[in-house]
Image (cartoon, rainbow, N blue to C red):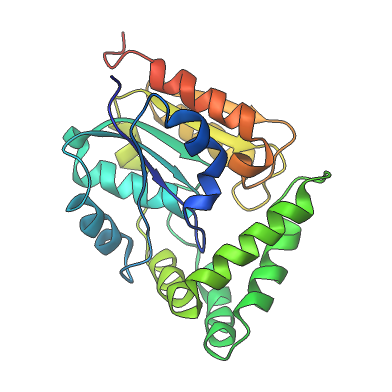
Amino acid sequence: MPEPLVLLPGMMCDARLFGPQIAELSSDVAVMTAPITQGERIEEIASGLLDQLPARFALAGLSMGGIVAMEILRRAPDRVSRIALLDTNPLAETPQIAAAREPQIVAARTGRMLDVMREEMKPNYLAPGPHQTAVLDLVMDMAETLGPEVFVRQSRALQRRRDQQSTLRKCKIPTLILCGAHDALCPVKRHEFMAELIPYATLRILADSGHLPTLEQPQETTKAIRDWMALPLVLR
């Protein structure tokens, strides 16, 4: 029996982000999705999750979930058996992006959070294709479910996040780096950079996906996760 798999969703997303993967994988792997909605710092979110997670687990995070996953790896490397980082970013927030979050926070607090989500997502998130509208609708529904307070907390946590390059350099466990070719938010070059930092990392680029490959290219994403879960724990 493989180790349990913990999934960390992206900003303003819940377990539905991994719906296709949970459906496929849960027949032979214990799968749990952990919310990243509590705390105004990445360190605080990671610390709270470690109190609830199994003693040892495989860890996969998408976008902000990947940022939290890197912090969990930094804090408790002995508890993480393998790690998958999907459409994410190991670097600290730039001052420009940190500043751009302030009007978004104000908008969220004054009842316009879904407008912010819509504007932010359209240019940056998804690959063109027939499923784009359905995926966008689901993302908006997840955001509405979580609400503006979570949006503000998560925005603050992203603004204050640390650089995790040194964490990745020390990573000696089976690692999957996966990215959609059309992701303008966390581009392919950033993932190539991450894969170079980590010894023995596997890099997968999905040609017809943007920022949310779990929903845009579910079968390909699930296969990549299955392949990663099958890698031996002792690498070379």
